[in-house]
Image 1 (spheres, rainbow, N blue to C red):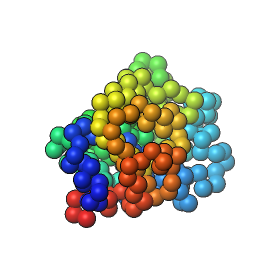
Image 2: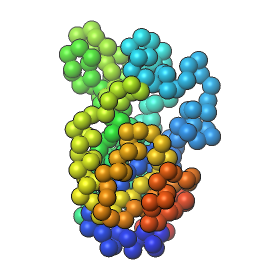
Image 3: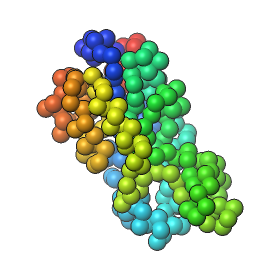
Image 4: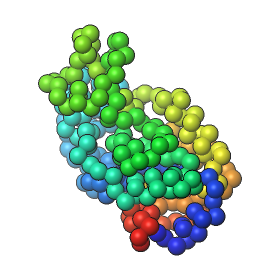
Length: 236
């Protein structure tokens, strides 16, 4: 682990981690905004359009064609960053992980207190009766997955044009307000409202681990531009 980061962790009692897509790239999941990411590929519609609430409602078949092909990443396994954060939580130092990712890898790594701002591919529900389904219901369906009641099943992920879950958002805010060290990793901090959450952290140190500059760099006590798995790994 980076020695300067280790010193800050050792001096802290209540750490919160705020992460984005860059946390999962070392697990083989492309960052949306990277050179090889979804936003750099050519589709009939822009990814933002296909992952919007309006598109889901109006073009459900095409939504699911794209979603099944590009958004279901259950092949991925937790990487060194996920595992290191889970261990940090076990030590009592890390109080919460706040993630913009929907891949479930923090939970798979063993983290207990995870605020999934944008939901999870592993949770799905009927748009009429509310019955919940696992990921297999989506993967095994032909075309649009349907509930036993006949209505469409929707992934429990936040699409463009939808609000964040209020309970998840409030939990993340409370964690930030009581933290003395905020580690931000693998996120450009350009996606709102998630990026605005850092405004709720006001009393402590800030570490930013990201390959490219972020709008919050000027507030950071420590900036690291190396791969996040390498930075957090206790063996480096």
